[in-house]
Image 1 (cartoon, rainbow, N blue to C red):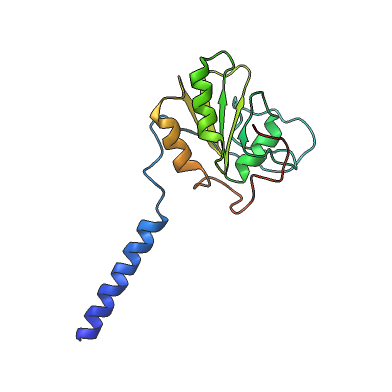
Image 2: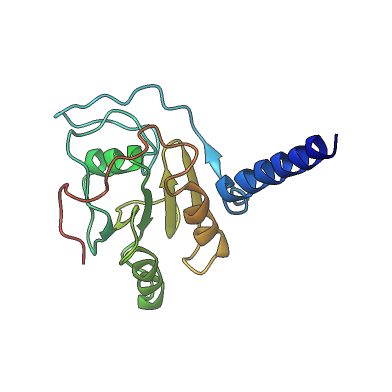
Length: 172
């Protein structure tokens, strides 16, 4: 009976450890919008996405290499990166340099973080992952990092284990 109790305690401790190690840090930040993404086929044609910027859908066969871009990248390539688990930070060009530097800091040297300028954004910064999006007034909002930490290689990505390197583009 004693060994049965010890075995039960060891089993419970092991399960608790597994739960703690596989749990995503925190939760999604407040304000995240969720979208149903019905399709994720490859296409060489331009795609009209219902969101600006897009949060998923049909996309180019080649993904965008993750990192920081000082100009825009093609939607269809960025969507493919998000399918692989990338978080895409988009920003308006006409922001103070410290805001752009903050975004650069969050993307440079990080795996599965893509950042690029995006024309006609509804707010200064929009961060997206597959099927989810958060609009922010500035890059100093703590929800930006919370979104990255939760959704990068996170629960919404449809293609786990796929790369965010070896694709198109040379991030800076």
